[in-house]
Image (cartoon, rainbow, N blue to C red):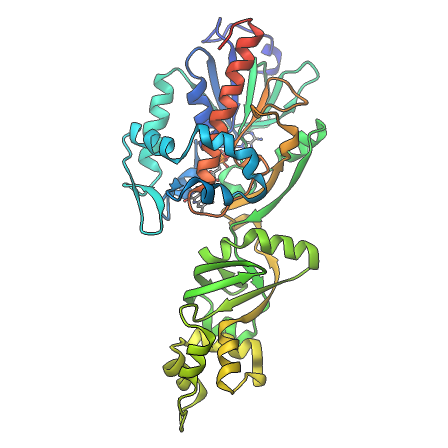
Length: 422
Ligand SMILES: Cc1cc2nc3c(=O)[nH]c(=O)nc-3n(C[C@H](O)[C@H](O)[C@H](O)COP(=O)(O)OP(=O)(O)OC[C@H]3O[C@@H](n4cnc5c(N)ncnc54)[C@H](O)[C@@H]3O)c2cc1C
């Protein structure tokens, strides 16, 4: 609808309350699905295709949720756990798996406890999902960027050519995502719009991302791209076992991503963060010291460390990088250095390549049904709300569960307005 026709014109779903969902990522699509019955639902997105980031998420194996017990599961959301607990109780991992299976995508639990669709990709699920939405009457308007509200309350949009459009809605679901991988659609520009409307929005910051370390030229040239397997990483009291990869600018990989939250906090507090690598997490300092007590003979230090401590060349280079000529020689001190190799992280890698973003609409701005307290009838869900979680399926689980809750809120809001009881 263009500007001139923004009045409440008769629409395909005339007679039924109109719900506008902005953002065609997993959160927006789930909200649309939950509202399709009984409402005229239209989903708008600034991109020309739906679920662009969701499709990208499926590239490396779509991890939809996790199988661990709920107390541990909830703990992954740290400070947001109390707000998310009732929301996840209404749409728990088992419900998510059943929902996938309803779309013909059987799921399985991997060895790490993570849950994947058998197809591993997002595309078959997304195809079946959009088909089902269209069959339920949901309409899509793509290539429409939401820019805010007009003075008369209409939602305003710009098309790709810069043409202005506006639409009234009886209820609105905002599902605009965070700000990672902006070229896939969610660029976080909505933060300015909502702040201008008086809504408190926490700064969007990279999460589940790599870290920057000022490597020497030698380490960068020789080892960028080399994996560090079976290590443990530690920031303060947080310890994560897993893998990382040395990059030209620092480190990436699952174990690094999982420490985004404590690293972000340390960087904000101190301007730098200490990341300790345990290069042999399966051995105690004493056991390692015993192995390092073996006579070295004529072996070079690198050969000795490789044989006695089982360290690969990249680990030995990291030890040299951290200690230089002061690398301890005594077995116990050398073992301690191997078990706690300190790196100084100077920054988190940028949003362009982060898997997700932390920050977003402050929880206090949202009621229990995820309605914006300052804008009755407008609800928010997905990654644009200020929760954060590591990879492992926790991101999609919370996106979909918050979407179900926002949809429930919108349904009740519209029913109450019409004097109906849901
Ligand atoms: C490489 C990669 C791998 C990932 N792997 C996993 C995984 O395995 N498991 C997991 O749980 N999570 C994973 N994620 C994270 C997951 O994809 C996101 O958390 C999830 O897509 C967020 O869903 P959302 O609907 O809230 O937002 P998004 O998916 O970002 O969707 C938001 C939509 O809003 C649109 N939009 C934004 N601004 C506007 C505007 N002003 N007007 C109109 N439209 C707008 C965007 O175009 C976008 O389509 C991965 C992410 C990446 C980048």
